[in-house]
Length: 299
Image 1: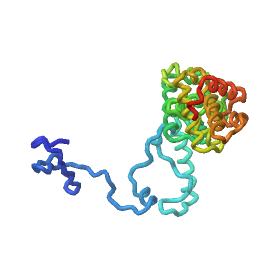
Image 2: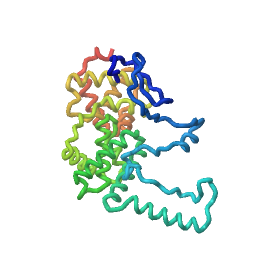
Image 3: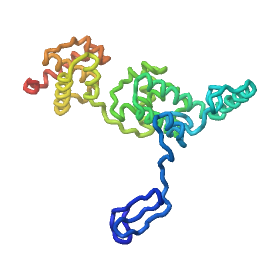
Image 4: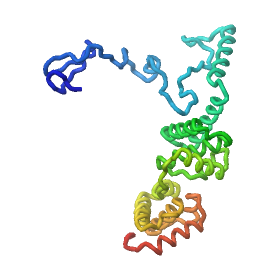
């Protein structure tokens, strides 16, 4: 904000008088300033939660975005005392109708089931909150575009989760998502291709570098191996050796080469098991990298 009288930028917000004044000329720019802060002090998180006027933030991972209220399952009053049996029966009926009102029709019921399934898979995979929100948003877009009809909820939720992981460079494969999903890998891949085409989702090819830290951690290797493997992949990408190759196979071969060069060798079987690929894939990618790359980049 700039003072319209003198053009100064030194404005003062006085919350006691609810005014915004210019420090240079004293012009009052506003006299109805609102203080968004609390009117009390809180010394711990419990007091802060009890004295808060607002609820939880809006989230897309719940079918009603978390805007509806919930009746607590504990049969106690506001003072923490147990309620009478008559009141308990009344609360039970209110709680039952509250659950029914939250999910009013079949579409909301299907959305609630799909989002709970999405939350279950993301929790088992240990994904962050932004990936869960992005997956829920993508699934809602698919529902609005009427892309769910004729397809299973399990495959569509797996496709939404995989698309969000690809978009935010989270190194997850279809095998890992299908392992926690109730749909097969083939169904999830088919739904992913359909959703990406219909919603025009632009996803870049997966960079093999994203898989290197996971492989290094699983194989109990140090940071030197990770750094050397990343250098190998970067050089191979600049030479066009990674195009048309699976990112997990390229990452596994680079980690194998780096472990041999740094004398902390792991077997091809161990690396293939950690990368969830076959030993033949690791061996073929290893031979391609060795034949094309010069030894000077390793020294």
